[in-house]
Image (tube, rainbow, N blue to C red; front, side, top):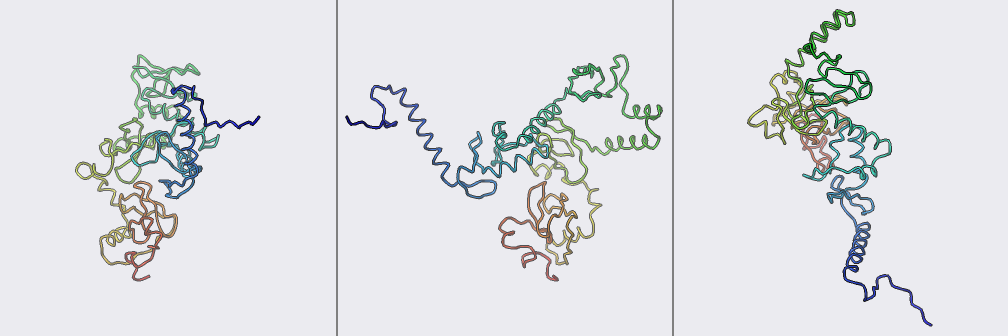
Length: 345
C-alpha cells in the first residue's frame, strides 16, 4: 500500500474555523520573524545596516542594533543614570524593561542596575531618610522623626541626632559649634564648615529637581541643568522645568554676568574669530578645556581635531570652534581652507 508523508500545513475539513485561525496567525508570525532575521535593517544610533539577527526590538516596536544598545545601557549603569534607560528613539521615552536589560548587561552589571534603581527610587521619595548608624532607609513621620527597622534607632531626620520631641531641632551652625566645644572639631575646621554652609545658601548653589525633588548642585557652566536622577531639564536660576533653550530668551539668562570674568584673553580672541574677525588661532594642548560655541559649557580636549560637548551633544572644531557634523569630519574640515583663521599655519 502506498503511504504519504503528512503535510503539516494540510488541515482536515472537519476542523472548525475558530481553531484554524490561531494556527494561521502563528504560522504567519513565524514567517515574518524569519524574514526579519534575514533582511537588512538600519540602526538609528550608528546608522549602520545589518541583518535582523543582530538587532533587538524594544516593546515600543523600535529597532536598534545589539552592539549600540549594549553600549548605551552599560554607559548608564556605569554612570548611575538608571532613570535614563529609555528607548533612544526620537521623542520616545518608553522604559527599557528588565528582561531586555538582562540580555544586554552582564550579570554583575544587571545586579548594579537593580541596586541603583532601588537606591535612586528611595532617594527621590521625600519621606525616606537614612539611619545615621547603619544607613538603612526609613520612613519619617509628620514630626520629622524616624525609626530604623534594622537597629531600632529613633532619630530626628533633620539633625540626625536621637529623637528630641520636647526640644527644637538645632541648626547646622549650632551643631558645628557643639562639636567644636566638645573637642571633636578644631577651630579651623569649624570656621571652614560654617563658611561652606553660608556660601551654599547665599550663592544658591543648590536647587531641587522640579520632577523628583532631588537636590542638584551647580559648580560652573550655564543655568540649563539636567537632573542626574531622573533626567529632567531645569533652569537652575528659577528652578522651573524646561525643555530646551527657549526659556532663556525671554525670562532667565543662560549665563550669569559674573561668569564671564574668568574668560581668558584667548577665549575672547576665539569669540572674535567666530563672528568673522580675522585673527590668529593658537593651538590648545590636549587635556585642556575649551568652551562649546553653542552652550558655553567647558569640555575636555581629548584629541587634536574635534571636541564633543556633553551638555548640548554637538561636535565642534578644536581650532576654529565651528560646529561640525559627520559630513564635515569625514571630509577633513580640520586645518582645511574652511577652518576659520588658519592663514598663518
